Length: 250
Image (cartoon, rainbow, N blue to C red; front, top):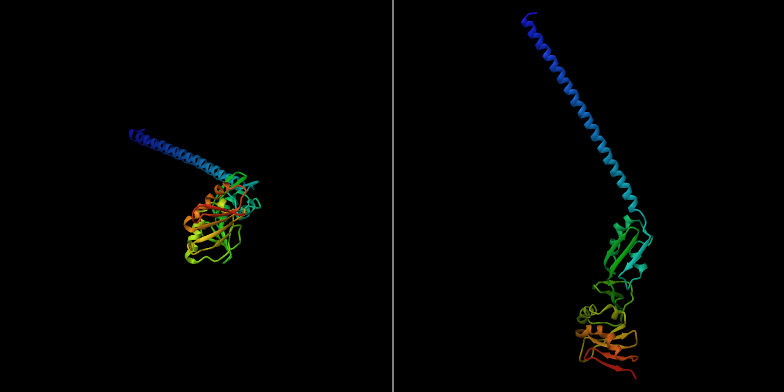
């Protein structure tokens, strides 16, 4: 074999070795890619499976029904009334409570603020009432503390006669300054002006006393309990419109 033939043979052998090496590398790369692809599909399956499991666990957890309801902050409204306003009288699932309860309460004009505290199956509803100031017998509406009206007759002092427009707005603002525990002691309110004071009112109290008030001194009624303690067992008329005197009934 000549030198030239040997050279050609070596070139051919080297070429074949290179081809075999390249082919081997290509197969190895394909194998690695295949393994990687399998691993990715496996991870994706595990991820999707976890999502589905979490979804169903969350769904069933949120649809567990509550077993206890507690109401806080109510004085005018009963517990049952608040429960019905919230729409939870049938002890619904947790998901329905989170979605609807606070919304239902906010839509009722007798509630100023509402907070929902959900501790698994225990529901606590905390409210701030938009309590009534008085019931106006002239238009058959209840005036609430925020200045709005309720068409129904609620438990509140009864305004028995007409109050002129020039006095009425000031009267409503004055009533908003009265503490709720004092409002609950008032039975009737009468607009009762005299020649000296055109903004004088007479309040009939549930305990049998009467109180004269004027718009500019209206918040003095908040001292009512302290005043009557000075006259134990006696009934009469308290003049808070001019001075602070008590006329005892004979």
